[in-house]
Structure formats: structure tokens, C-alpha cells
Length: 217
Image (cartoon, rainbow, N blue to C red; front, side):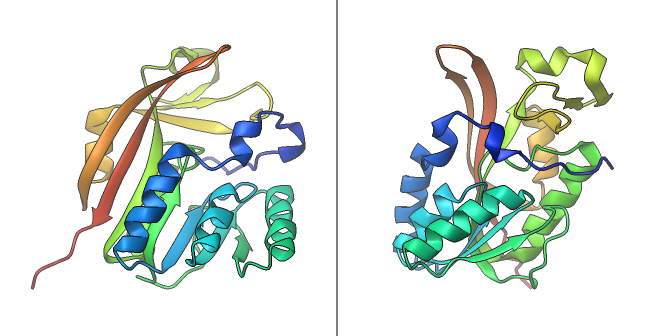
């Protein structure tokens, strides 16, 4: 299993990583109507989603490996007087008790590992969610041209990025079949396969909305 490596936020100039994603507004309203309270921002970065959910009254836990990222979040939460619980650590080893979160968001986060690592991350997500709790997570698609960069591939699904701000960070790629296999213990609500096009790039990814299946005994 490859070691995790944090983003260096001082090298990140793209402001979109500091603005809540479009999907997060829908999820916030959906989960609020469902009476969810305990929210985990898994791989919170600088906390764009932690702040969004805390402002809506959720009890927010924010978790990330990047020291400078969580320091920026800590400062912003303090200035806004928002009670965000912030912990630094590796997403493959979450320091939370079993079944404590109603909902979990991991937006462009969990694929920063290899094939063995992604399995461990999924196991941890399943462990910390309550039965019936929902998640929204993002995977990189094998449709991306970067998946074919065999010079930096470390296993069949994983490529090490060599550009800022992600130098040395592993990226796990998958397809629909791979997602269904990884999430076989969950109930899938929706999967979107999206080509995100900007002026300078075109990237494919999967957005997956699902829930921890309630076991009937």
C-alpha cells in the first residue's frame, strides 16, 4: 500500500477548491430534511464544505492530511464562530468510533491512494457511517488520458502525478464495474459519469451517492 501524501495548499492557485461544489448545496438540503446531524467532511482540504454544513447547523467533523489546509479551516471556523471539530490524519485510518456519522462527503479525495488503499478507505467509510447513513464520494475515471501515463503507473489502476500541486500523489482510476465491486456492501442511489471541461482541461470522474445498507436480522 502506497504512503499517503498531502496537498501543499500554498501551491494551489485554482480558487474552485475553496468554493463549495454545486453538489454540496443539494446534499446539505437533502440531509437536513432527512434529519441528519452528524456530518463528516472526509478530506476537507481548506474546509469549503465543512463551513457550508456548519453554517446550516450540522455537527461537523473535518478530517484531512494537509497541515496547512486544516490550519486555514481552523482559522476560518474560529473567525465565523463555528464549532467544527478538526483532526489531521490519513483517510485509510479514521480515528472515529463505529457508526457515528449520519452523512459523509468525500469530494475529489478518496482516489488519492492506490488499489489496496482505496479498499481500506471504503472499509473505513462503511465502518464510521450509521446504518442508513448516506455518502457522496468521487472517483477518477479510466476515461482520463492521464490514466494511460504508464511511465508513472505503480499498479494496474494507479498513477503517480508529477505536476503541481500534486507531485508525488497517487491517483486511483476505476470504471463502473470497479465502483460496483468496491461498493458492493452499500446501496447505490445514483452514479454520474461526468466530463468536467474547463478552458485548459477535460477530466472524467464518477460521482457516487449511496447509503450504508440497513441489515435486516
